[in-house]
Image 1 (cartoon, rainbow, N blue to C red):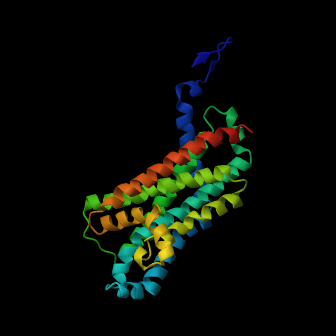
Image 2 (cartoon, rainbow, N blue to C red; image 1 turned 180 degrees about the horizontal axis):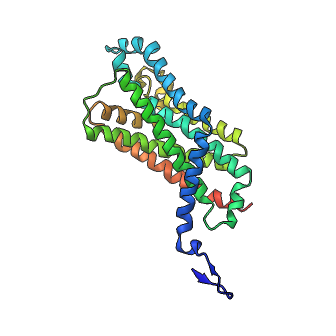
Amino acid sequence: MTTSPRGVQAPTSRRNGTGALTGLRVFTGRGLKHSFRDPESLLMAILLPVMLMLIFVFIFGESIAAGQGGDRSDYLAYVLPAVALTAAGFGASYTAVVVSNDMTTGFMNRLRTMPFPAVTVLLGHTAASMVRNLLATGVVLAIAFGLGFRTDAGVAELAGAVGLIALWILVITVVFAVLGMVAGSAEAASGYGFVLLFLPYLSSGFAPVETMPGWLQGFAGHQPMTPIIDASRALFSGRTPGDEWWIGLLWCGGFIVLAVWLAAVIFPRKVAR
C-alpha cells in the first residue's frame, strides 16, 4: 500500500501482481456462470457428441466392424477417442462466440481502467471452457462404459489417454479463443471455427485411413487429429502408442505456440482501439 498526501492509502494491486490473479479468478467464474446460465449451449456441447457416438455405434458400427472382423463393441472402442475429441470441438466453439462478444461490445476496453490486465478475460474464458469440455468428455466416457466399453489398460495408460485428450482440449480452446478475438462478430467467429469441427471426420477417427479414397488418404494420414486419435486409442486399449504419441504432442505444442503468439500480437491492438 502507498500513502497519498492526505494520508489515504491507495491500492497497489497492479504493482504487486495480485490484480492478474484476481482477474483470472473472477473471469473464470464469470465464464462458468454464463455457461450454466445458457443450458442450451451446454446441453448441445454434450448431447451432440453423445448422439454422434450412438449413431455411429448402433447404425454404422455393426457393418463397419464386421468388415474388419469385429463386432459393435470393437467399433465402440475404435471410435471413442474421436467422439471425445469431437466433444471438445463443439464445446470450444462456444468460446469463440463469447470472446467475440466481449471484443465487439467494448467490454475489453472498459477493463483498461481496472487494476488487472484485460488479457485475463481471455484466460478466464479459456479456463472456463476447459472445465466445460472436460465435463463433456467425462460424460462421453461414462456413456461409453455404460454401452459396454471395456479395456485392459492400466492406470498409467488410461491417464495418458485422458491427458492427451485434455491437451487437445486446451489446444482447441486456445485456437477458438483467438478466432473469437479476430472475428468481426459472434456469427463470424462461429463460422471460422466450424471448419475445425470437420477435422475428426477426415482422420482415422471413424474409419481406417487406408479405406479412404487415395486422394484423401494423404491429408487424413498427416493432419493433427490422426496421431492424437491413434495414440489415445492405443492407450485406451493398453497398447504402446508408438510414434503417434510424440507426433501428437508436437502438433499440440505447435498450435499452442502459434495461438499464443497471435494473441500477443493482435490482442493489444484490438483492445487499444
